[in-house]
Length: 292
Ligand code: SF4
Image (tube, rainbow, N blue to C red; front, side, top):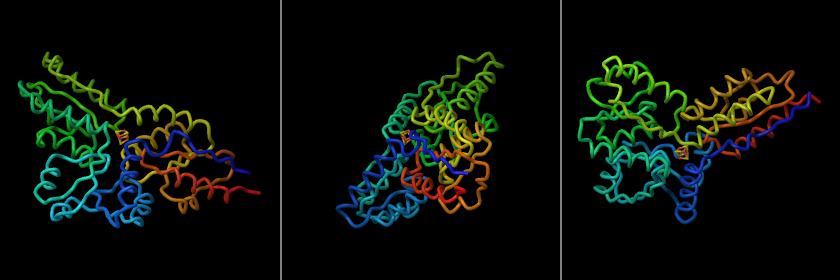
């Protein structure tokens, strides 16, 4: 069967990632190397491409011993401690923190600084994720990260709380967690103790609705993402729920293990960290699986 392959036009880099990559490319046009603190994007193929241009990904441990150099901060942002180390070690930071993340960091910092009534700051997100580490840093690491229902045990329900969300979390799960916390406060007749702010990036939540439709329209879905991408996991699960024939891949070689028999239409989509060039490469490779 001849395959018809389409790429989801809403997939690919969001503006936060585009800005970080453009910033790195512009710097590397004029300089040989640039350090980047952590993966610039959760996609190995794109990291490989930028590494060839001179980008050097460094860990936080490596960063702490660098002196008098230039380091790029990626779209996820960093906690205040990183800016302090940079100052002490004469490191010039090129800050490509996404404006949406930056706004959220400022909101949490303000809440933390003006906290007059001992409010607990809760962050709904993935423990250890770079963005969450940056957000938690605004509270001097006193905030509570909520990754699952079990984490709700850490809340002191005799004190007020305010919930924020990592920008790439699921809107549905955020409201579910807020409702669960509300119920726990209600048990003590203290529901007014809970405030929440939906700080989910609409680049991800709007994509969720679009990708569900896209997944339904094809016989088989190839979801292209790196393993570390939070929104990759979230969006690929939406694809799976709407099309059981969804395969998660990160490069064209993995196409060899997919059965394309009885498939007429293939839809290719990805996360906010998936480069369009990679989805195009995979689309080109797919043509090899058409039966003549
Ligand atoms: S997903 Fe949204 S918040 Fe995150 S980098 Fe992209 S635009 Fe910024």
